[in-house]
Image (tube, rainbow, N blue to C red; front, side, top):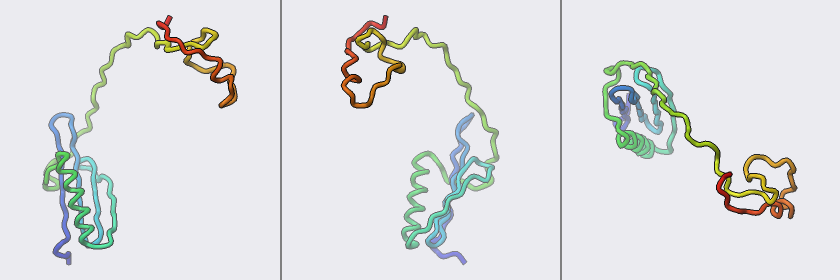
Length: 140
């Protein structure tokens, strides 16, 4: 027989169109809190956590419910809303107008300061810092 302080809260977030269609269930039984979540109409995922006392478990369950309500979830009855097909957003992009990345500085030899070096030097050696001379360029 369930104790008087045990509870189950079922929340849903369903947006019109291609938006969210999710559920969140928090079950508090004694010192155990079980959270189930996923897309409406699917089994979803389940996580359980134990707490040292029933009061701490109740506080954790209330905190989780509060977080979801602030995000837009609302109390609902399981099974009323039906599963909805997953819709993919259309990706719209255009070709870049950039011609080449800007060169911020050049080595003393005149080579651009991006890419890999063909002559690696030991980390911390004097040649690694002495072979480059910072200078602003126009990228040409």
